[in-house]
Image (cartoon, rainbow, N blue to C red):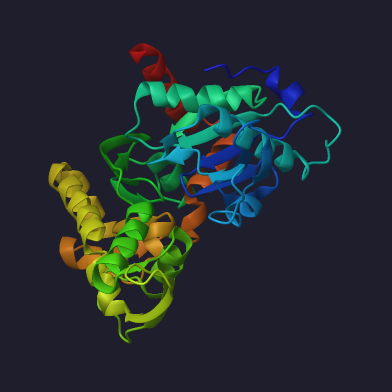
Length: 359
């Protein structure tokens, strides 16, 4: 594991970090400070020189609006690293920025870092996340599976002999896990989540209205009027883009009913995965989940009516975690705040040892 008393000396000169390295957003928890960074996982770079022009919110504002020589890229796809070099630069930027919040600004920031990764990634992908973190000047890097971090961040009793079910719906992946005694008993991970819902909105606009809209417009429509269950009061939203027939700008008003039908595919896939995980869960743990309910985390859990849809399909109580967007970062943060906690040591040791054994 590498837990060493000498780390207390280094800890005086750097702030340990918990990082949710998400497909859509990256959040950074600084030991003793809480979450200090929550920005899009976007980097604007020069095509030829590979020089970084902007990272995070500033880079996202450039998506679809850059000149030919600059591209705004999302270096993570479906929760895993698609462009190692760009992720390394992005992490280095966020680590340096996180240390601006520390009183040790003038010291060389070489923190210990816990990074959340999807539970369904391969061992090579886990190693890529760890290596990118080390190359971004972390002193030590540990990976933790996102459903475990999300459960810890949501305040679930992961160390108890009791079944806790977490559904973490991010930008690139949906993680469904049942946790007991500090370990993941049942684990399902699918690469269907917020990005696929956005894509479904884009396809709906193209199919129904011959309207070409961009990713940002689709995301805005999803947030404003996307739903997984009939609303008490249906909503209307305006989609703006280019008419595919005339090539001219066009705006159409659509209802939340239409968008709900348009995004039914990815929503059905997520609900089916939750049901499938429940079907595989041992009876004693299912009884615990029935009593305490299913907890939703991640940005996707904020989709209107998703909790009601899952509750209707599973016949179990469903709760949305407090501040679901930050659950993974808060969970990783709790681990760095309590590195010497035996439960957290066991969780991190298990993840790292499985990684080494399978490489």
